Amino acid sequence: GNGLMAGKRGLILGVANNRSIAWGIAKACADQGAELALTYQGEAFRKRVEPLAAELGAFIAGHCDVTEAETLDAVFENVEKKFGKLDFLVHAIAFSDKEELDGRYVETTRDNFLRTMDISVYSFTSIAKRAEKLMTDGGSLLTLTYYGAEKVMPHYNVMGVAKAALEASVRYLAVDLGGSNIRVNAISAGPIKTLAASGIGDFRYILRWNEYNSPLKRTVSVEEVGDSALYFLSHLSRGVTGEVHHVDSGYHVVGMKAVDAPDI
Ligand code: NAD
Image (cartoon, rainbow, N blue to C red; front, side, top):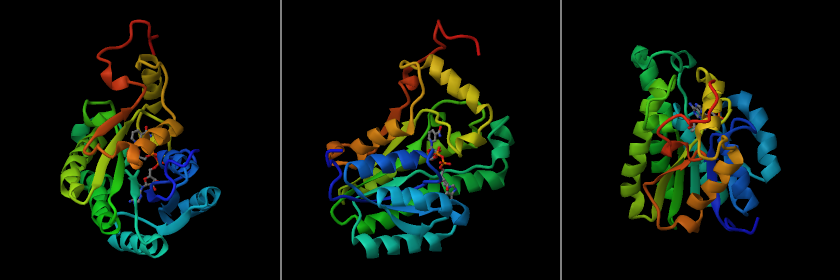
């Protein structure tokens, strides 16, 4: 890389393994000279995240489960001790019960609705509040969303409702934090085969549908999302906040199945 992110310190939440979107973003940032802190969710993921962090020379800020506020407090304390301040933060966290990422949205239980909103939406706001204190020279916050927030996608269900709320939070946070020169944006990524995506019903069909019907006639990679994230996390986007940017091979502009798409 040519040092676009040199001198910048960032916290990236949501690396589960080397297929995670957060990992694609972490690699792109490190390649451009950023200093990184990563978290892991529980012991099972620690084993996966430790070697990945080592690969990038990243600091491990500890275990983070967004449903346990004290783990977030500890992570931010560790980041403050290590870095002093923060320039950017990536939130790549979402969860919903697999049972409800299939079939009809109307069947969503109250329990899973609340858990999905807590982990996938509220966590971004609670993290933004903590990050604000460390972003003393301004900063950039980035979250990950999906087209299911805008249009009904099969099986996405309560996660689509959660992503709509997440995108609205991006706008509210952009206003709240704008005065401190902290920008807040989202990337709406096309479907990628990750651990979280494997919970979604008929995911292979969704991938193929996008491949045949997007303008670029293919799906996107975590490296491509990572490169787009560089724009939001660097000074290049210093005039941009409250934005939801699609990195989806252009799928969101298409209104109908491509005439030459095979029946799948
Ligand atoms: P992933 O499974 O690699 O990452 C999901 C992460 O969420 C994991 O690291 C997991 O530890 C974390 N997480 C879940 N519950 C948590 C909790 N309670 N506390 C802390 N962390 C928790 O999958 P991914 O696809 O890279 O997902 C990252 C983000 O990208 C998610 O917001 C997802 O909705 C979004 N996204 C994914 C796709 C896709 O097709 N894969 C498309 C658009 C948006």
